[in-house]
Length: 261
Image 1 (cartoon, rainbow, N blue to C red):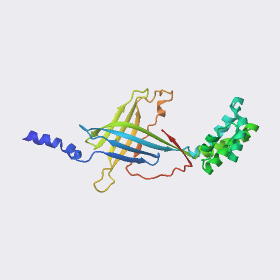
Image 2 (image 1 turned 90 degrees about the vertical axis):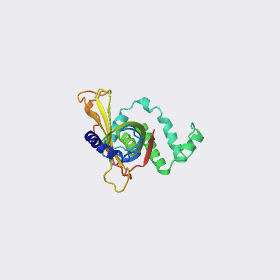
Image 3 (image 1 turned 180 degrees about the horizontal axis):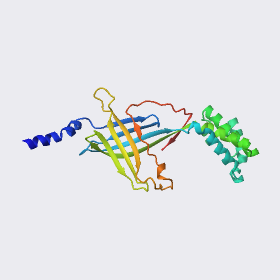
Image 4 (image 1 turned 135 degrees about the vertical axis):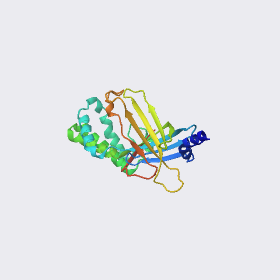
């Protein structure tokens, strides 16, 4: 009888937590990184569970580095070879066509109408600003003209947000002592990275809700090594990325959107 009591008591913590609902579908957001995840988790088997993730990230060039990008672009344009300007004669005709709304002599009328004709007014203004600046650069090839092209381009590129989506799977095991679902993957790369992730039940909710937070981090066990691209292993992102269960919106200040697969 005593053995039975001890055997039962040993399993009380795990049984109590096992009665709680495991993650089903997880929605979580990292507002600072403008990233959201949706994870559909399979029914756990023997305290192991696989979740199928979809992650969406909105990224935008750092506004604080705008002048740095412009300076680099000016330098690149100033060093450009004559061969890179071989199409200059075509640009003047193209600008004229864009302003008049009529296809250029050597262009496809239908394609021009389909593409340029449907561009929003602001997009047309931005594109023409770049094209006109480039026509001037073709004629003068001086630093001031190069800077005009760089600034017109930065006006578009600097306000373009890229939306990237990707999918991945992770297998978690339930840690009964912490009541978290944890995933640890040892990679075979030169830096000896370990991908750690966990799903922890949200504690800041009221009522019988099944909300979960998600945390992911990469650990580097070989700090003195080099990545496959030759960079130091210390450059590997080792920050902790936290996603909380609340959904919401964030400020991104985008004028253009670029969708990536």
